[in-house]
Structures are given as C-alpha cells and as structure tokens.
Length: 250
Figure 1 (cartoon, rainbow, N blue to C red):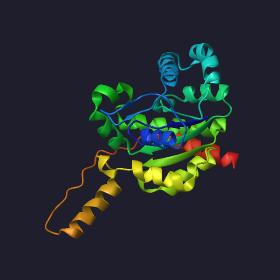
Figure 2 (spheres, rainbow, N blue to C red):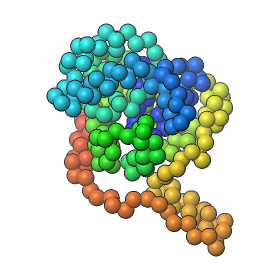
Figure 3 (spheres, helix red, strand yellow):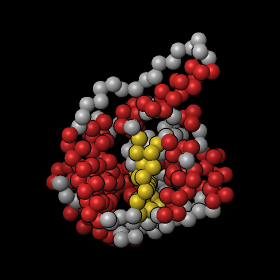
Figure 4 (cartoon, rainbow, N blue to C red):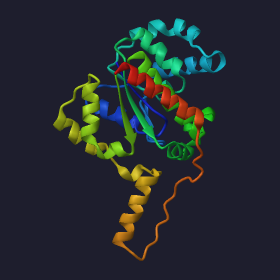
C-alpha cells in the first residue's frame, strides 16, 4: 500500500487526484473550498487517535491495539493523509502491521506551507503544526523513521514537482505503482495549475521577479518571503542522525 503524505499544502491532494485519475481511488471526499481532500475517513480516524495518544504518552500502543485489524484489512492501493508525518510512532505502527507499506513524501518550504494553510484556517489550522520549526522536525522525524524501518520511499519538493512529470512518474514506478506513461502525462498536465500556488520559496520567487523585470524593466516586483530564518539546532541534529543511519545502511 502506497502512502502519500507530507505537510499540508505541499501537493499531496494533487498527487491523490492523479492516482484517482489513474484508477487507484484513495477514498475520502474532495473539498472545493480549500481545493484539497481525498483522505480516507478510516485512515484519518486511526491517525487522529494515534496522534492524540502519542502527544500524551509518546507511544501509540493503545491505538494500535484498537485499530490493528482495521489497518490490516484496509484494501486500498494508495492512501493520502498528512497525519502520517505528525509523529514518528504513527508510521512505525502502520509499518508494523503493513510490511507492504511504501511512502511518497512531499515537502514544501515550511513558511510557504503555513502561509497557504493560514488562508483556510477554518479547515487547515493545526495548532501544534503552525511553526516552521515544527514542520522541519516533522520532516526529519519522518525521514529517520523511513530509513530506520526500511520503508521504500521517494521525496518530492513542492511546487517544483508541478513541472516534473517524469520525476513524479518515476517515483510512482519505483514504489510499485506503475502507470501508463502517456496516459499519466495527459492526466498530469490536465491537473497542473501553477496559478493556484500563492506562496513560493525564495529561489522561485526571485526567478519570477527577475523574469518579470526582464519583460517589463519599468516594473519593480518585490519578492515576498520570510527573513527570520533562524538556525534550528535540534532539527539539524535529527537530519544528521538520519544521514548517518543511511550511511550505515549503504
């Protein structure tokens, strides 16, 4: 079973849409108001329960015992839920029941992800995931868990992935979900709408500004991105641990 996960507003819903177009339904409803969704209600309920328990106890033993059979019985080729990244114990629990688990992880500049979610606070606000440092640590924890548990995975960067159909195609293929290249190409470009990306990373923002300035030198475009990028030592240590673990495995 393929898990599509990543921080909110990082392209997971679009990838789930793509899977549905290719014949693999993720379950769940689509919410037009936020242009996202397709999270299977059973998966969301399990992960909500695990996250609540993990925040209190640091483990998900009780939730796993309650939902083990439901996880094992889930008959889907692909599921999508950002909650898989909320706490490493969640992925570990699913992996303990589903040895067939593979993961397609997306990532986005944390400041941009949060800014995008803040446009829809009614639906997308998660108090404990409202700081860039929290999303960075979620990434480090998730990568470390994937490496430590030996879970096959691929990582895609949003919004870059919008222009990288071949990279997306290869990621699905490597994770055991082959799709027809030509049909997938047509479906992908029918989905992509870069106009919906309201917040971009520093490099892409500057590139857009430079391109616009070249077209119209009299127009000054001021790139908008955060400037308070402080080092987050704990997150760096987690990333170093993940790199060291990967080095030992190779």
